[in-house]
Length: 67
Image (tube, rainbow, N blue to C red; front, side):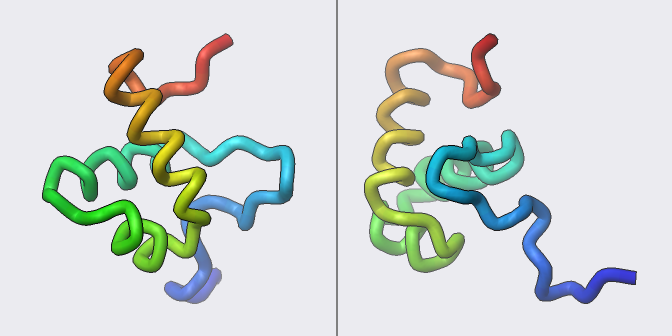
């Protein structure tokens, strides 16, 4: 059985995408008026990645991976 401290998504490497759950979590935090810095600290994701996810969500809508 895995411990509760393990993230739902595997820790990403330099070229891997975030899983859909983490992208949705970023979007949800943004909708709850959390700052990019707060989201970054909360999820242990670089601020640039958080900013990119929010920007793409505003422009394209869904956070799902595109084919």
